[in-house]
Image (cartoon, rainbow, N blue to C red; front, side, top):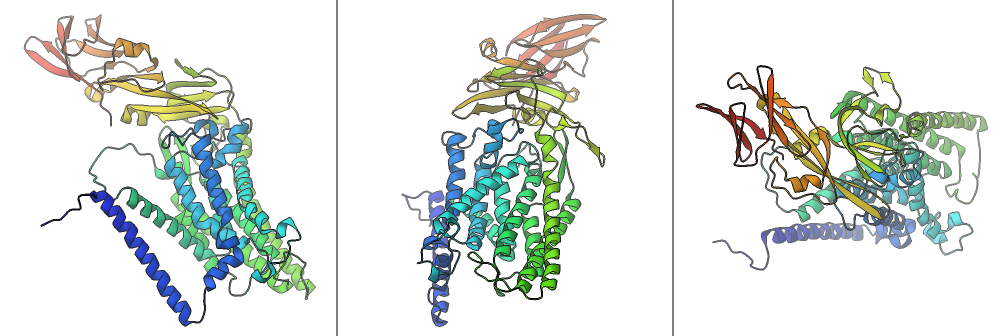
Length: 596
């Protein structure tokens, strides 16, 4: 016999179970740890450690950073009223001539998944970086004294975390390749800062962030019923701003080296070369820094996996050499551990130290050159801007935006500079819904042809600070077996027009839309009485064309459950199929295109 709690649904009960189990497990581990601490005579050691580094033991800088990024999504991007469809197009870094995008791109996101992923990553690694930085420059015993400078003030050191995040984000945008968007470059800077001080701890923290994501998903969706289904998927690695991630990581490493350079780590906390190299490699692999790819045009991307893995390993070697050379320099220099207030207390073996300082400069120089090599290509790219060149076909105009649909046109964004290397070129073509704004320097393919053909419709949100206008794109068509599809692409400003899913829209609906694109006609393979039949897309309907002995006759596509006769052939439309009849023969000729 099965008993069921009438006041709790199964999903709610499962949520409560996973939360309760997690809470009990955490409390149990804490109790065991406190028991071990008590047995060892170490009372409240970890709590004192946190309070030695953080005000009240809390990483306030990390919290302020997360709050700032969340507010940008909720209010600037209108995520508060459109959580799953924020405004993104005006907040991308299109070029140096578009200040709004350059100032906001690093702190805006494509959607809730993008936002939460970066916030979880920040929550995982930023506290490690903030712990290494510390709210207090000295030991706890010195905190009761007055703070002689802003650098010594713990509240100023708290604000240094979000301020540095903003600065790193802006630098990453300025030297980011392409119309980047997202906080991930700053997250990688936190990773780079933390990994050279806590190599394996940083890798473990990133795994913990993934675990938190799984836990939240389990609470939100306790059960999932799935089966085979069709889906239009682009490669997951094609959505990664790999150059921006690598640039952020290197900026974080350089900032970490500055902190290490200003103080001497004790023997216990000093990372070992092997541990540091392994930590950087694990972080690079876990965070997909190996996903080096090239856009070939359309929906085609090329992944250079082997090259990417090799680059991650080389990067780990360069970082390890730079950090270890710096540490060795500090050891031989005999500097004071509390360097926030004073210079080194002794300098023995000056000639040896001079040699070590030379190695430190070389290692740091290699890091700087690597960073510059990553950042350099973005400068000419971001100097490019679009002009007011007319788009092909009819367009929908929303303030300074122009929207159209085209196929096989040159990608105005990628082809700013024509380069060819290793069999790849920047001169590529694109097909789909194209958005252009000369004022903002925007030229982008918002929805690809393949995605629109799969889904049948899509909504693009145009806008800016304080306003948004959705534009609904729809595609309808008729398929002639293996001979292709004749289709029409429409656009309407505002909410999506109501439709019954039929390929034929009413005249009233069509008048409220703009026809962006008409495909080529499609001819059916079967012939009756030596006559071929072609379906032709028009702005208000579809047309049937019958060719026989160099003579052509046409007629509009009949409404559902009606028929029309052309050149002795009777065409009958039943639901989503068009039949043709001649004498005693009746065959299905065209079928309405279906979407997922």
